[in-house]
Length: 425
Ligand SMILES: Cc1cc2nc3c(=O)[nH]c(=O)nc-3n(C[C@H](O)[C@H](O)[C@H](O)COP(=O)(O)OP(=O)(O)OC[C@H]3O[C@@H](n4cnc5c(N)ncnc54)[C@H](O)[C@@H]3O)c2cc1C
Image (cartoon, rainbow, N blue to C red):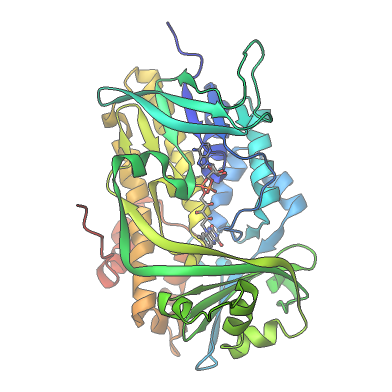
């Protein structure tokens, strides 16, 4: 009997919803199961320009431009030396995408998920995927349940809250983000050494931001114990976060609240103090252990990982949502072709896996280079060569998925900042 869906996607974040929208656009029947009911808060609010290539294909341009602040570049500031350097996306090797967006994720994720539904994907919120069902090595379905009474129910279906049902499709995609549903079960996840950071974050009104066309720039403030992000939204709210070392977290005093710890962290940096001098916190401080991890296999017979479910690189260069969005775009093409050919075995997805792996490892190498110090120096170099500036800008713009450019600038980066990969047990 033919399955009701061509693909079941677990998770409705940017990865899951982009994949669902892309498959629907290709005429495929996609089902998204999302555990939460949107809108919901999520971290990861600064996008990269080259995601817009995917947004344009999905007809999202106008919706995004109407709601979100444009981000034309990134400014890096060093608290100990006072150095500052702005990179404008217009200076990249390929300046086609001059800007990205700064997005409160509750609004952005809701917009993407609704858009996927408008294009024809079936979306069920308040549905939790419990486990992927296998027949030998092949994924054939998922066991899932509606969470509480709010779980969406399809016409003609009788499912009470908590009842586990089995849903089948020839392709199952894990897009559950840092929950890594399937990779955790398969024990395929390894932490990346030295990137054991913790993130503290909040929203502020009235934080200092740049002016004019640079208003939407992300500002990255480096200080002794890590770095801060300042991500301005349209209006008056700015997202502020600190990614800090585990030793700084261990300095937390007994009884010190997260709000107090955050204030003490801000006090360590002259730039951060200055940016927040007239600001008011409008969201309590949250915290997240922010380990980078890598997963040793991203595809199998009838299954794929998309976005954070397939690996996570420290957020220094705001790469996570882009990897999820662009990865989903590539996954949609691979799934569409595999279904056409009637072969959804792993062989059909190895090209997707290679492209995503390449981009993730490129970012990972540069991030490791930053924490070890040498890439940080390159970032602020006094007499930086124009080609180096273009190269860094191209990375910051997320233009890392073009195989034809690998022999040029990308191989240079890989030689200078080769990723140090975790060992798998
Ligand atoms: C501190 C920090 C700062 C960051 N800053 C940035 C940034 O500035 N820019 C950027 O691009 N990225 C940033 N990121 C990364 C970014 O948050 C992620 O890369 C991005 O959200 C990945 O999208 P995704 O769709 O793969 O996963 P997610 O956005 O996490 O979506 C996964 C979805 O799956 C759902 N789900 C989970 N388990 C289940 C289940 N069992 N059943 C059904 N649904 C399930 C979840 O509810 C969630 O909605 C940051 C990350 C961290 C930790």
